[in-house]
Image (tube, one colour):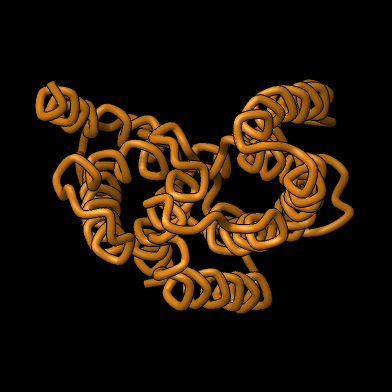
Length: 262
């Protein structure tokens, strides 16, 4: 039941975080991993797994929080365009550190443990009750902020107002809470945080972010549920990572997305 719960939470949290980033930046390429948050989660998980200094989920959260605080400080000083450039460069730097840590894994078993987390298996191996409670608190905080701030975010996207840099920084922090609540438990999951919000914006021409919360959450949850069922009950006799399998299943949706835009 916990695995199914996190499939649903991931299907909600990642698209909601993605659409907020697109509205915050007024850019369809906005993504929750754009500022290196996904790379930071992997680095924290790798460091925790290889060293044993804390649980995998705690390491993922701590490192992601550190990354967010750096981006928080940078947001106060840079324009949105410069912030995107910084995020790409910073994410590459963090990924390089993660590669070094993983390459020097003490043994194959730890390397396998890290890989299975990174493949988003939703098996929740090694996850404690404390990890679950903490992640649910993060999800609740990020979700509540998104719901309460929908008018301000929509007005900012429409150009009716301009969020101040401190407001953008706080929004970034809350997006990090929402995303880390599932990534720290299940591992990084691609596509749903970038592809699904873009599909939502193609399906609905409305600029009201609440509508995109609903559409993105529904599509993201359905897509992850379909992938989870395919991975667990396909009967192919091979191991299918959720992240990779979902990318394959989602390919027809991308054809739909570009065909509609054309």
